[in-house]
Image (tube, rainbow, N blue to C red; front, side):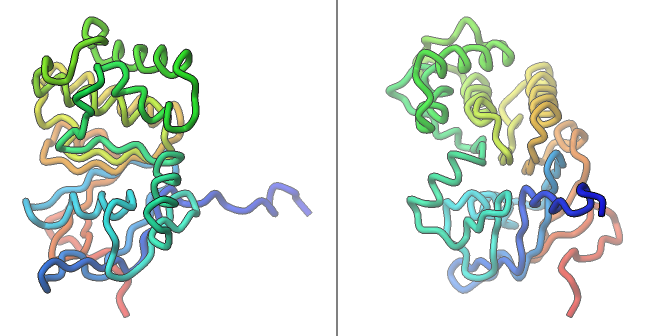
Length: 241
């Protein structure tokens, strides 16, 4: 028997089955299925209010689902309490929020170092790693700047650096280039792509930008609570009964 043939297949970076979410009695996600493999990148498109950011929050364990399951690298985050979900998120997920969620009491370098410090990595290692990531995003001169001193575009790049610094298994990005000029957007997208390729991370990115969506292996559209292939005659990705 070939020993290699007996090895189990690697877990999907994201495996979602039958995901449901309602707000005020309205279905936002209605039995959604999604599988993303390690190293695969997916751009998530859709109209404002279609539930794209909600889907990212559910995957990250930041909101409870009303039904269905979510597993990250084989770990069922949808079955965990808030503390356990936070530990799993720290270990496997990098999240670049549309609203940034930076800590105003910390400078740029320490904001980026936070995920590493939470993991127990000592500051003498976490801070240089944060500085190196910020340098890759053109912010080496802003390491000690307070968040209030930074432009919206600079804050967005810091949020992206924070999401990437821990080399996550899964990167969730909500409009990661929305506040960036074309040059900085291109640099940020190169970094996202290079980091994913280098570490084998999966990427799920909400975007309205054709430039950003172009780096993805797949483009999906969230419409009427389900995912569809990005094509004029798209068919729902939910398995038919």
